Image (cartoon, rainbow, N blue to C red; front, side):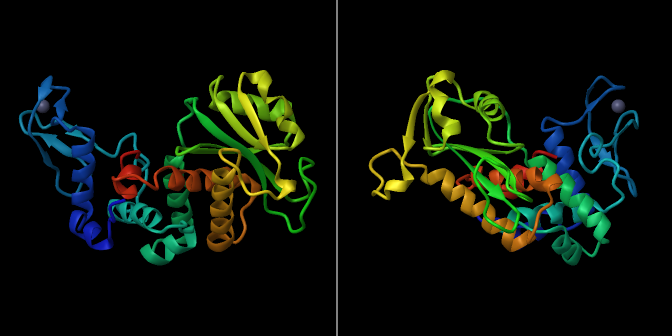
Length: 282
Ligand SMILES: [Zn+2]
């Protein structure tokens, strides 16, 4: 991945105007179409406002309309900087850190944090290929019995495509009636799926998959393709992040955190800097 450093950021976005300019150019790559003139015309920045005006008729356009910045009074560069911060660290950043780094109030930082994170949801298109499916628990103090929703713990179902993307979802429980529709919505029939021997996964063949289960209790060396290493790697990344950066996560916000980590995982090998990928979703 190309490293996009704070120097790059400061050079590309020295002030609010340069951020607005980026947004305008991103939204109108071929130039701004003026509704009044009914053609692409030259537009210039209106001083003191977040608008551009048509050179011919003076009609205003507002690039922030319809983006996460729309109703915000926070300076645009602070938004961009917060996005940069969220993209620049390997394991994420908290609202508290955004507050510290940008100088906005905690309330504002938290709002920005949530808005930015809302950009990180993955698309829901089902795909086909080779997948690993597994579940884990987040939160709670004591280890609990699997599949029973031990107290204070939240169940998370994860599906990762080998050499591909991960999708992880908070679920109420691990019943087949809960889990199978989620799997069906993400993985196309005729795909190969690997799981461990947990009973919920017993009937995955009924969904049209070639199902292989891996016996963890035998403690054998992993032979060939029959393993769930990729999804287990993702779980450890997720848990390390939640414990290290956020300490604890309420059930209400858990899916947001999961989305953030999934996004990081899914874009870890991109050539495009993560900062730009997020920015292009505003
Ligand atoms: Zn015009």
